[in-house]
Length: 113
Image (cartoon, rainbow, N blue to C red):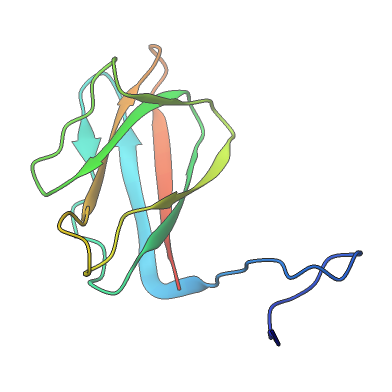
């Protein structure tokens, strides 16, 4: 099957997405849960996240809140996440973060297209 994706050294397609214009979010990571203020665009299906401090993450709707029992993201890790699509019954519009230790930081979220 032909593809226009970039290819690696073995000529295998590399699934690549670009940064969505206007799709950058910054969430303060601290001792209480915080989430992105604006919902992800309706056509966003994948987000990339990076935190400068260790954090717990949870995706959900506009009321989502993270806790210490949620998914752990080590500091300095770049991670791609699916948030669902409009064909599924559940599509997540927000991402909440909570600091895993006492140091505050920032969770950067990039919507991908």
